[in-house]
Length: 403
Ligand SMILES: CC(C)(COP(=O)([O-])OP(=O)([O-])OC[C@H]1O[C@@H](n2cnc3c(N)ncnc32)[C@H](O)[C@@H]1OP(=O)([O-])[O-])[C@@H](O)C(=O)NCCC(=O)NCCSC(=O)C[C@@](C)(O)CC(=O)[O-]
Ligand SMILES: NC(=O)C1=CN([C@@H]2O[C@H](COP(=O)(O)OP(=O)(O)OC[C@H]3O[C@@H](n4cnc5c(N)ncnc54)[C@H](OP(=O)(O)O)[C@@H]3O)[C@@H](O)[C@H]2O)C=CC1
Image (cartoon, rainbow, N blue to C red):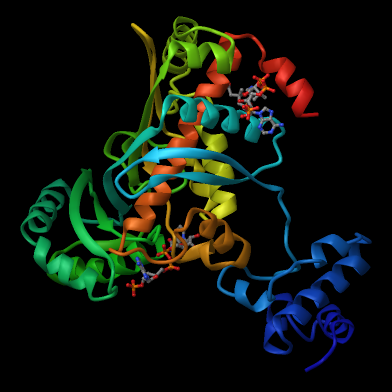
């Protein structure tokens, strides 16, 4: 074991690579050595980055070349009453953000939902996808491979499921483009978001495809999955969890909470979220679902890059006889309560606020509960922002809260 300054000197002298420090010291000392080196090279003061409260070793599977931790303010919004299949409680939603007025907004939406009773939520579909791309000789061969895949689901499932005790292969859909064959594998990954699980399982199934057909694997991810890129396939067919939330707010709640009417909020939704989004050719027919998805993802250890598909959501609002009906449907929300960043201490504590850290009983129920909570939080955020726009107080709210 050796001290941070000595290790930094060895890196500077070319004796060690920056990422090899954990082989020569504990994780905290290795991080300190990198800060030491950085302080010398760029003169930055890293005292706050160094002041983290968890054992650096627990982040070993989550990051390389660690120097410390970024601290993001963490808040709660709620209580937010939810009537779902896996959540039937009033929850406090943990949100990590740097955008002033965001939590106040979700909190106001939650208050309106409380006044009205509760939001209903349902997970409509589960299926984490991975789509490898194979090359073949020509279209004729591509069609034959696709036919073989359609007839060989059991063999592919046996290979894929040999790599996991939780994952279940649900379907494999072939897509042919000339001499490329894409196979979109979809898995029930239970309480895991499942991207590692699906990738490992799909790699095993791809070996069977290569053994049994002329197809040759080009890449285990062929972008038809589609992970972390805007894509209509996720918005239409779903990815991860497809989840919806809705609520009916009586007119008096709308007026008391948002200082406007159901008709005015419905008009904002139609002209902004539907017509405006259509004109922009957006995948997000909503106001700011990404805000709640991102803040909840950061708080609970989700893969933040998957906010890309998490923000594919449609908000519907209708002025009814005695109030306002609103819904938010998120077709591609990639969430988990085990694996990835969920085991890190602050993230795991945030999941504890919701009572869903770790695996659920039955497996998958905690993942579903997290999806339901995020959907209800997104609904609260949509109601409040649409209310602020209809009542024309968005700019003043941000002037007051956000700067
Ligand atoms: C800011 C408010 C809530 C004020 O709203 P208000 O009605 O003036 O506030 P209020 O003081 O009367 O309080 C009403 C409720 O708001 C909550 N609330 C109020 N203050 C706080 C606070 N400090 N901390 C926590 N909660 C707060 C709280 O629930 C409170 O109820 P109570 O508990 O008192 O019965 C409102 O104006 C609002 O929601 N505005 C919208 C802000 C918003 O949604 N911003 C989202 C980010 S915008 C963006 O990023 C995306 C965008 C806009 O570009 C996307 C697009 O293109 O549309
Ligand atoms: N590899 C890739 O291409 C990509 C990886 N990622 C990263 O993948 C990680 C997430 O992958 P993910 O597979 O979710 O997590 P992990 O790789 O951390 O694996 C989670 C494992 O937990 C086990 N497990 C225990 N209890 C349960 C339960 N109740 N439900 C489900 N699984 C359980 C499963 O093991 P078992 O399978 O043995 O049953 C599962 O494979 C993130 O770090 C993300 O950033 C993101 C995008 C792409």
